[in-house]
Image (cartoon, rainbow, N blue to C red; front, side, top):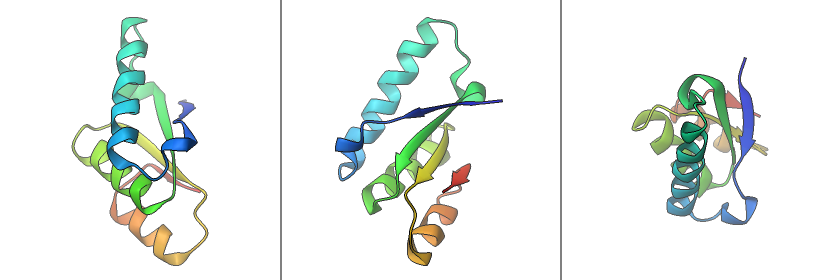
Length: 88
């Protein structure tokens, strides 16, 4: 299975900072021989910026992302369009 790792929620309205944090976390895990792309699920808040970051991370960098705190059909649709692994 996968281990969930939540990004700092204070970054929830800054897509670039979310992407940078995921990259930094992945780099740390990689140094400890963790197969990040197959073992880690990055939890990202379901803000517009969070969904945008999850889309970039999923489609461009092939990270597994879970979009959390999804309360509307618009959020769910945007997350689904982003091809994230989990929508919650």
